[in-house]
Length: 435
Image 1 (cartoon, helix red, strand yellow):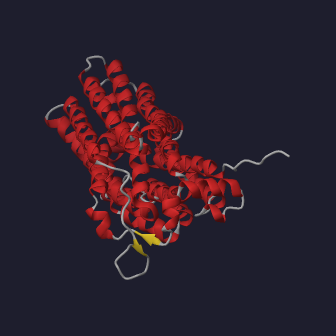
Image 2: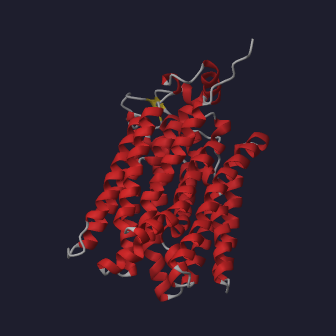
Image 3: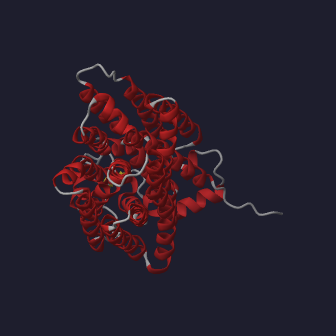
């Protein structure tokens, strides 16, 4: 008799989360490609456009804790579906700002803020789902695949948006993005379940494999970490400070890199969109590769080496490459080196989310939401500060600052230990645990 192996539903859902993340990044990065056209149409300066960019990250960051709490409380299936519909609606609403309105800047700021608020549930929800579905030994690869969707979505955005803009207009490009968001949200709701026991396609062998690999979390299924334990954990603060630095660096590629290439380095619209894809494609590939390496190293030498060591290496290498790219006299060579730097940065991506899931367990949504809230603060600062540094100093200086943030983010990882999960308290016992 043929032996039946474990089903692989968890990997199907990992793939769908990656696809959902790709669409979410399409919705957030589209404005950086349309930014020059929008700024001309609405007479916005670069600092004002930077405020529009940062409005998204402010909304996104401000609601991270709410998104994480909601995922812990109501389950990632419903919360992520709601978020996808929300961000699809506000992507479309971006097109409703009329050029004749005096307060166009204010409307853009409000809409982008609300778009960010809706997208805030994306990764805290996925991390809460991951804590119940993915064994610890597989979390590096799972997060690597999930965040490969970030790079993939951001990488395909420039050519897709550029082509639609050239043939139809920027508003039609945003309608296209909104429709994709609705479809991806519906697909998640139909495919996903909050827990593997609830999914009709998970066979007993896969369920056993999952539960053996998430034993610590399962043992405290109704127990969440109180806020005191979260805020007092030096490991939580370590990954949070490092992710703040990471957010500052990553967001420059999602906002200003295309404008930098086309207005400073002299690339055409077509060439600029293609070269803007390179760091984003490198992010996608290196996210998955970094996760795979992290799992392999963790298995052989422990999670502190596998998670923290890979993060130290990735951020450190990114610092060197970004500095070299900024100093390059050749526009093409500089763009290629910076793309390699973006890829090196993303070698560390899965470490943040795997460690936040390991530390948080049943509170993974809240812990990762707290961590990501500060990363978005870094992103918001990038959006506003980058053109200011460029105006007063140079664009080279803007990128040298990102290299400095990489160094800080790398060093902080040396003080993190992923083998110290947070103390938990009984849910509903009046001790102040998140509900």
